[in-house]
Image (cartoon, rainbow, N blue to C red; front, side, top):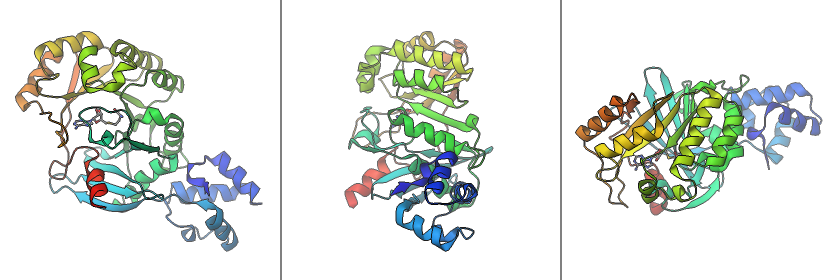
Length: 343
Ligand code: SAH
């Protein structure tokens, strides 16, 4: 089956041509998929019955089915478990902020990166998501709440830069002004630090925000919790981020998950400041969300504030990640794991 939801308008026009259809049909089809977020060819009432029949036979209209939705009573955060067309499952999260709705999507089924504190990687990697499967996480949520999504963070399960071509195609489609037209500035991609891909991404000259999951101030400490650090060392990856900042002019983000006794000392804060510097960057501190499978404890609120102050003394911009959906939250990847065990 042809994955038409992953096609850009030129490719779709060519495809319509191969079916003997005029270019304006491609426009109509594109609009049904990416503006009206149609779930079924039969919704596309301005296409002929014959064309709809043909499409049903040979083109898949990738749509994800919600299997479970958990809704926070505290702040309206919604955590979705979606079934993909092949029966695999991925998680996505909707968060409400003053400036709009933000959706966090997954980029792969499972993950091969092996970060010690993360639940998404425990069962390993299954496959990459297609662009259409990344898009439809947002489309399905938008349909469910009947509201426009304003921000997208690629921070769910998976390593987006390990699915580079599909990620780029996804970004181009979601920001296309003939589609949902989400601003590139409202898109954040989070990576564990695949250095060559960071350099590649800098060349794309996109206005998206790049976030690095740094999580440690030294090579020795980073290696302990993030196996990827054995392939790309900490200086290399921070240099790549600075290159991205300089080439794009975009402020970069360093994510730093605070784990009690592992990376949250005063000395860690000093070393972190020296490593990253204060130019056009900011640190997002995240108290680790402890997962059942590992014995990591999160830093106390007081400890988090202390760490923040230390960084601020060195002129570094710091935010503390607001915890959303605390009452529904398992850590990233836990909803899917629970269902896999039950299923
Ligand atoms: N692979 C990408 C994106 C997915 S992980 C990356 O590494 O950035 C998204 C973010 O959640 C990362 O910063 C990751 O380190 C963090 N994370 C994963 N498990 C966590 C946990 N148990 N507590 C806090 N943050 C976690």
